[in-house]
Length: 350
Image (tube, rainbow, N blue to C red):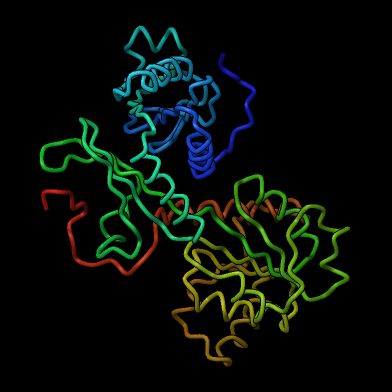
């Protein structure tokens, strides 16, 4: 029986971790992946749904429109081992029956998690846990999937366009790119941070609030949030500022803000923003330049922080910041090593 109330991770990395747990517990598992979309498809390419032989499932390939059909196919795949390619679209009678009548079309690949696939999923989970990007390439007409790691030559160039379907040596190959979950370092346990930390968590960010002032960074003010009471010049290197991390500096105190900004602007984090008026920011820029921050590094700094939505009050300012974070992350779908002059995709026949 299908458990439609099963607790499900909301992101694809959480779904892959669940697939690994089910498979290692001895359950048959199938994984369905959106490999192609047209029109107003409800879920993006690369989205996963996993199904256990008991009927438990988590994830989504269509926000509920065709899940029943896909789950039925997944149970068949677990039983016979043969992968399926499923297509749903507005022109199909099946699409109207199951609810995909929004004008879009999706193509879904369903395959069993056999020992070889389990080993690859475990590697993906391990790489992302170590905050490194990776990519799986799966031939849709059959053949072994392969894993590409972020330290492979030309990785950033070949996989910079993210998950997609390509034709390589005459065969259709689906590239599924995985990156670590986004992390947000909030410097300053101020009122805006009290609103931003839980909002960011709901949006999928792993949020940590850094502030050495114990009266500010108190558990009573940040229920459930992760707090770091070290000074930024100690906390930020320990947390790690990688390409999947954003930094929001909120205190207005140069003793706290400036060291955090110097570290963040010198790092490869995908977003650096600072709270304050334009006048405050002008004085901040003067201090940072005097401390050796280059003009090129300062170009990365978003200040005043947040999308201009005429925000008033901590909650609205937090919404503006989170919107800018999501926009910045979407503009950088996969960042890793310095790109090299190689083809966009290099498959087995290259």
